Figure 1 (tube, rainbow, N blue to C red):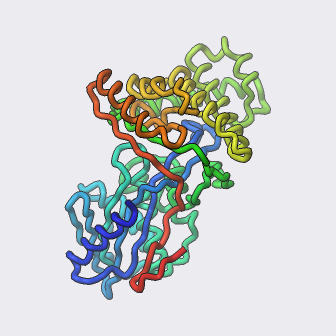
Figure 2: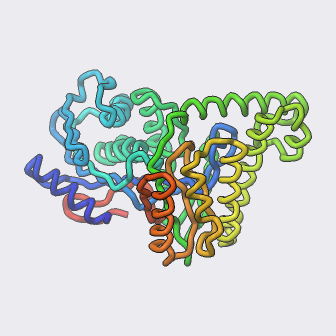
Figure 3: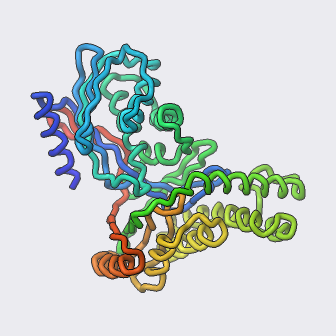
Length: 395
């Protein structure tokens, strides 16, 4: 699939610009194994890049003119790099302009032609936007020798989304896209950006994403309310336990002792956060010991917490998780992402995918009248230069 994506993107570039692109870059989407809704609660996340990519075919220009071609959308946008870059009414363009706006301040002066195409499903919570931002940032850095670090590229991608797109996202998606490593997940501290790789060669198991094909509108409002609730909860916990600065300092026992004081709803929110932070640490140990059954159990516990305590799931996702939980071939299943729709991530026995997809698809169609989408994914390396004009494959 990767080779086909590269071939189609390259051919489209040749058709439009009447020459072969100088370079090919690949920028991956991402999954999060565990650590949901704790990035803003001083916890850890455990993302990984996956083998779904945006492919960029690029050539430099001798002037400041730029042409962007989104092959999948059949749209293009032209501009002069010397002009003031500001958001326009095409959202896909804004992800790119937001990156270029920052790179102009770091020495980018020459124009270029780009064609890009993707195998990352849109709207499935696999961070196609971060792949686009980081792919552009990485490519410009390589092509024009801007001297940026990987961390700087990730932060530029995040800032582009904040300023040109208007989404106040965390750093996880961009970090995973740039720092991804084959067969490894990243335990990332979203506060300090300290990170550690854990080997994730799942051997006889594989990762399967089941896309509910729904996204409920209360994601943003629900997200904001949850943030307010846990902030209230943390303030109360600090009053009773002055040694606590963040949820990372808080124990489950502390939360349980304050159940009546916190009130039912805020207690459940805080209880989930404290347990999820610990689950990420336990998941890191499970990976270090290749204990995939334990990892699957932790994933399922996370979903229970997201659904019942944090209340960010929905009927469709709960159905997909419940439908596989007790199958022998499934080690664990949970909602992935912000919630109220999107995908479930499932750790299952290799070879059982086809039968599982067929059975769950039929059950899901009968229950909701929605066609399920399924994606088998492997953990891949991060954004990279694939090849140059002379076909030298780069590491």
